[in-house]
Amino acid sequence: MKKGRLIYNLINLIVLALSVGLFVYTYVLSDKLSHILDSTFLPLVILSVLLVHTVKAIRLYLALYGLDMKRSACMKLYCKVTPVSVLLPWKLGEFFRMYCCGSELNSLSKGVVIILLDRFFDTMALVCMIMLMCLFLGGTLPVIVYGFLIFLILVFLIYLAFPGIYEVWKKYLLSSKATENKILSLKFLDALNRIYREVKGVLKGRGSLLYILSMLAWGAEIGSLYLIHASDADPSGVISAYLSAAMGIGTSDDLQRFVIFTILLLICAYALLKLFESAFAKRSKE
Image (cartoon, rainbow, N blue to C red):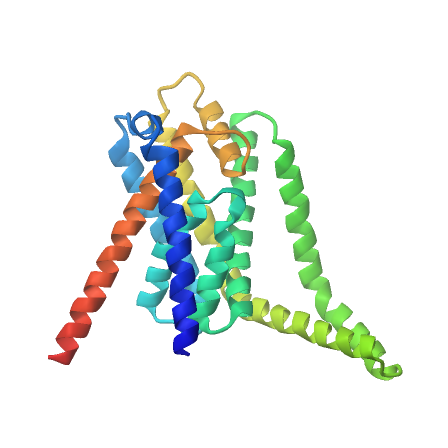
């Protein structure tokens, strides 16, 4: 157990050190930081970051509700992994989130399921926001939105169809002559069924709430962006660029500003949580 915790802490140290180095290289050692922070709306940006990540932290806590993780541990986990997730390119930070969540739950499969569901609802809410933007403010949907939409529909259909597929293939494999390949197929099928049950357990009674929280988070983020650019000639163009950048298409100073304050504020929140935890532990010993 101690060895496992040592490896966990070592991986955390390496990933966090790489993330700090990337942040310094990307923002501090270049002119980006001063350029991005040159805005008269920084208080609104900070308020937006606080509101959005409060909602997203509640969403993660709701997804983890009923599992063996305390509320304080959940909040610390969110504050630690989210800056890495928004900083590392190509969504590599999501693997770190899965690993940390799985380690805290003592089940990597549960960690993977929780984070995948978190990303699923976040992506679904983002796609809905972009579609609503195009509907009310005009414009055309980026091609990648169609790709995400098809992906979301396929995942939903697979989820609905899996119980029937599982029963059919399990009955077939159990009724046929046992071979090494069929035994391996049964094990693989059972592993998929365990994942399905974990997904179903999280979604049961909470799926709609997770989606609503995702929509609230994106609504707060887009709402603050609209207030900042309400006086612009084309605020919808700025918002479209922001949403496209959030999906990995192009860049947006507004998104980078949001990312910077996300990193800084969540690091401060994590440090405060650790201080409160240490103070509480010290008081309990006295």
